[in-house]
Length: 318
Length: 318
Image (cartoon, rainbow over all chains, first blue to last red):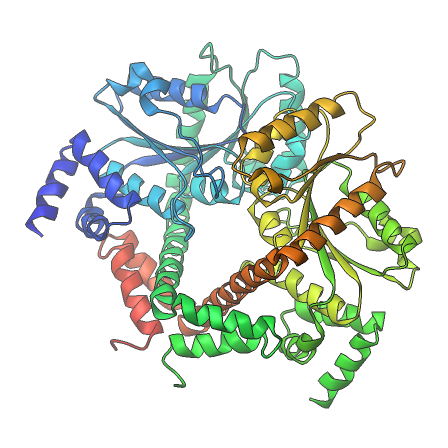
């Protein structure tokens, strides 16, 4: 208890060693992590969060690096969480934070952390959200969440941000079509990176066309920006647009309603997670096994069994 | 009740109109669907199921069409379920079954059905599994499940099959890398389609190399086949390999253990689904809303609230 208070204090001071420790506790699903978050929660809510996603090869890493540098040049601090859900089977490779952005890791106003695939309970979005809270309570002005890939897992993760940037590049072929399916709807801003490449204006045009054909109100259509992260071109403009988006939302009340929607999603997600954990403790493996045998032998059916299990969970029946 | 028995009888006879009706009930999450499955379940388990997945543009539709024709030429019957989870937001477009395979839809030994995105509870895998049961009980020798895309949702769906074929094509660029992340592990057979294209042998080589570097026991390495679905080249060989894979598994006992694993997954999935539904009825929206307000105002935290909600679910506390 005392320990937790000590811990919170160090985090509020921005002590990086303790921030790192806290995130490790979160990753390990340690009970202390929850206590810590409960004790820090009243100091959260000030950081602006930016989600950045897009397919592999879009140059997101470089873009994010440049964005962080730009934020630093404005004398603001920035936390950065790199999430790679990749394979649910292999654990996924994580790029070393230090190797990736050497000039940033020694900057006291920057904190960088990678997160990989968590257990099968699907705790990665939860772990990311909680890590954002730690960075938020530590006083970082901005927290950037970068995800690799554009699947459902990544979508869930970046959607926790105040502004979502979807990064695209020229010439990924079927890519625009892939974007359509699922990610269009979560983008607040589109970036076509590698703008020096031949196809860049075409890709931007295609994106704009796609946006026009979608269900956005005209004034809510996400802007499409061109950047060349390698040379830094377009990065200040991108940041200005992100800021403008958040400012507008703050004025219109959308910022607040969006955060509330995210909170609703969060509590439902945690609840779901807790229930799954509860099920694991309540119904043991052998019981499942014997039921599977019965179903396999057609002595019962999956639906009869699940009703039985459901009643056990709620302590109904025997 | 009588109704259900009548219904089951028609399905066991293979009456297509009733099969279609049953699948619609399943899609609508009608209670009758569960009753129907319970009553038919003892007649399930005979159909061999084949899952086919791969990225858009790999020519899966043509390949599946040819595979069905080949199965028919062997005097076997085949049910086909085309699943398109695409966007969780827009509902996703479904290709008309009839438009797609005109020569097959009039064949009495073939049943084709498309399934699109279901509600946010994630019922698509469930609906697919249950539709397979209906086709199985109807006496189809084979049921093919085809999914579009290679995300987690698709992976979950095709994993319900006795044999999983992952279709690839030459020259999708980053595609091999995408395959690596998540889908490698579920493939029992790889197909490089559009084998007439220049890059086909190279893609096949890359796949084989990837397989060699993975954790497969040598005798379990999935074969890599070349097909050209448009001309029908390689389709009989593909079917032979699928059959051989299933036959081997039957002999070794893997067929049975795999089906049991799938059953375990299924009951856990249904249980999860039922719990989510229960939560929806037990905790009303207004309650969530008021809790979100409290969290937003930092009067409480997401974790305190979810513990409260959890206790309500289990009827603990007040």
